[in-house]
Length: 263
Length: 263
Image 1 (cartoon, chains in turn blue, purple):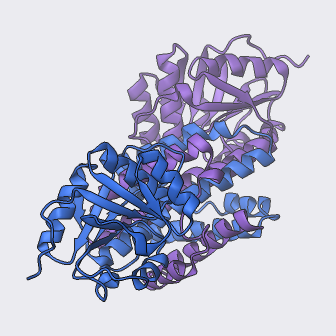
Image 2: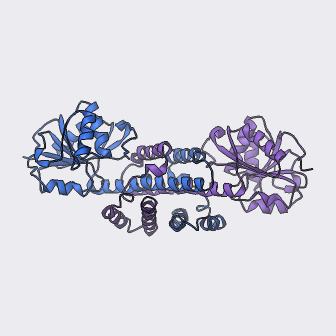
Image 3: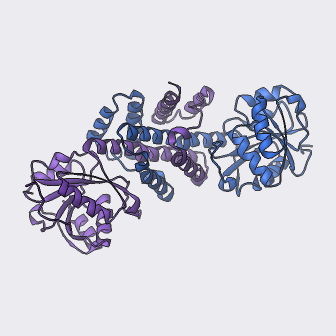
């Protein structure tokens, strides 16, 4: 029968010690889920996180403790590598990655799932997980229900998403987080180069995002590209002559803005 | 002597009826500056704003009222066009544009300046101007002081910036506002295409900006590009096969992120 061995997840082993592992481990501990052990191939990293949350640690997969859940908060490529290195038969294995398909676990165990927190994590930036959307996918209904229950302890926004949807979430997140951040980093650099305080741009950034969340980004678009103000665009590209990679971004993002509203 | 005719600006004629004109006019009226008249080449637009703030309006430059200040909240190209159409001798003329140099006024009057609000304005999105940085440039010290005084009534963040700095502010603003917004619009589109609610991405957007303002965008960068995760990057570009303009953005922004941290 397609049933995992437990009804409720009370204990877990965390595989990984990066930003996602740190935030999830801390949050689970706070909500009464017992993190029994941290595994990391780098023993110092495992030790550091284990000391923060007062649990065991190891860098040897053979020494993993027994637990209701093995949570793989590892880089994408480390997930199959770690899976190949020992037996997971009968164990519930779950990963937290946006772009790794559910069935990465299929050859190794009968019980598996995904718990994808749709958020950006930095080790030293505190974060309340409560509003973070968690997207769940599971090998069967029983595992799905267990993951819902588990995630509900740390967040109020749990949804289902299949592997293709989760991959699209990840892609959308790259634009909305990583690329947005890079646009801001370029803006900071331009200000610094011209001896202007980077704080000058904070109200503009806050208002940009406030408007985008309020009326949707598609409706909130302003600027030279949507107005097709070729004179300003030409001048800005000329100002970026020492930064060919920013010139390309300026050109192609402007083209893309124009196309979104005029085709 | 290089002195303008008044010591304190108490009355102004607003030239323009777009987003910037609307927000500034409303704010000035609230703070006791008398907007005596709205000029717009489109009489309906002039009338609409004039009715909102209860003042006269016109679409004829020959009929402009007397005022301490003529505030050009017009598109970049309309500023010199409007200047050429009548005499401005002895009048204090000020524009609000990021990329128009101060000396656009030089052939027309002795008293001139710039009052550049570094913010994004949408007509129907209310906005508190108090925290908006205003950048000032002026023909002489007396005008500079008058513009400081005037701007101080609507904002607490007044700074000086010369024409080159203001142009850099505008360029930085295009990245931090217009391009950020377009990244968000692309993310919204990807979610919609995959039947995922666009609200799912709001916590990620808010956290991205919170981190960037907290530790600086340059330090806050995460994602596949900075880690040089070529497998994810290749997969994402493949997912965008129907949108060549988004593929280009993905490719060149990823390249630019990588270069910022690895060269």
